[in-house]
Image: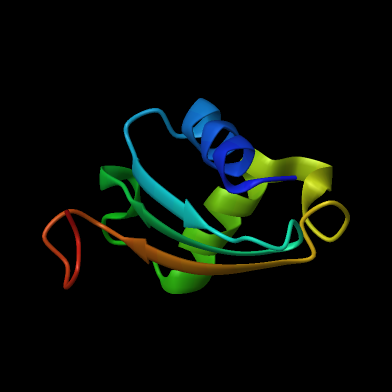
Length: 78
């Protein structure tokens, strides 16, 4: 698994999102996902939306994924 593949998977499920994924060891990654779909949703719901795009890869090929999920205009959003 690599950061580019994870970015592509998230983008397939959330095409309107701005996505940045980093991780060099093949199992631990960090991602910043900015999407209008996150508007008004709590953090846990946002994370679940991203996890849903990764399916069974989470906990298997992707051992750990640190997430920062933002709606446009939130602190740090693009």
